[in-house]
Image (tube, rainbow, N blue to C red):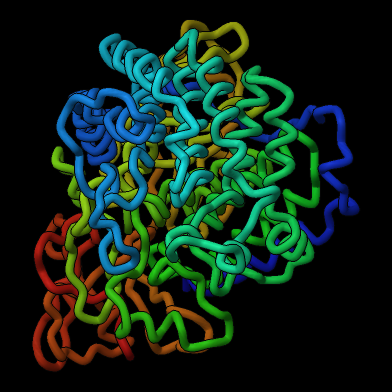
Length: 608
């Protein structure tokens, strides 16, 4: 059962975190610590996605943002800074509007808020593809943004930290990935301008609400997400002040101190932004060596998983629920806004990459793939007019719908996430390479004296079969580590050139294939993908979802069908398709993965 496996993982993570070194005050540290991690990321250019749904999403987003009108993208900054502003309004959240009246009317909510994320997504796309027009567009956008930087922009602006954080991200990515020679200078100017509008420290929404504010939107700013990108700016050479700014905005008082002590302070917090803040804690560890913040991130993510749906999604109505309550189960009937999908998946991928790099624990990869196959790969494509997919719906009478406002926050995280698919698939280790996701892709690297490439061919998770072909310039000994998911059955097998491997294939660990590899070697992995049931939480063991391996199965137009535990576990696959059928007393119920759902009514959970 997934529930048991996940609970064991969470308890082991908490125990490891509690046993770390004594708390250290990150603000007292004056020199960076060289942090050695078991795993490291590949460069974007090292990994190529091959034909499949991930590549399709990446190409769609890359093409859309490459084609957007640059005057329209820059218009909010020019307008609010008092400059001539040619181009059409983009509308929705992105363009200033007198209609803005939160929470009744969100038109004109955060002008220009996702500009930095669009620049970031394009910069990462250039790093992955080497497409010259993409690099040129990034550099034009940075050049166009530079003269708009003015304190006038933030005057009477409801979310200065929120938008400036995204601009910081876009500019450091333009510098690092698109080789923009102006980007760091522009960043320093932009930072100078926004600083007077930032609070003295990270404030949560309750603290923001206690301050004088024009309307409720002024209480929603997210200063606690700033440290991650400030730390990255410091690492990239933007200046020592960014390290001090990162420390200034670490949300220690109300968040990280408690999480480091394994106290769950998530309930009632805004979900996505506080998962995003866990990545700031990871940067405090990686940059300043703060064991406290590492513990906070590990424990915080464990608390997130304890209240996650079977899809890996979390945060109904964008908030965390109280443990030992009925809130999560009640959400199946009370809301259709179950998981903020592109934003949540982006934050989830980031924190699991960080935690996997630092701990080497393969089960963070299990969590990542659960979100991949059950949430974001089922998101509707972002449209050229800014209409976006926002919430996944796990209501008992659920449907896929798009968000009613153009260019919301999820339109910014979606292109960043899809550009990151490649760097989430493989990791480097001191001994070789770790294969984290089983997706059509190839990766190249230098191993000792050999130039190596590994290419995956797979239809996973439609079935458990993956084939990996290695090409080497010369024989070389190293380790290929394969992630064996915690749910994997006992019939999981692996071969090299047709021969069974010596490595242990233990669920929830890496299978380490250590040998001298030669050109043309082939690895075949066959994951045993059992049907299993996942209760929504411990309080409601009879409200369950059906999964096949990592894939949650959704009942299509189930009506009032009553399904028993035995009937769910006796589900039968329909031919060679990804569809399944459950025979109930009232007839057969069709069940399919989330990406296959179109306009049907569906249900994730069943009362058995």
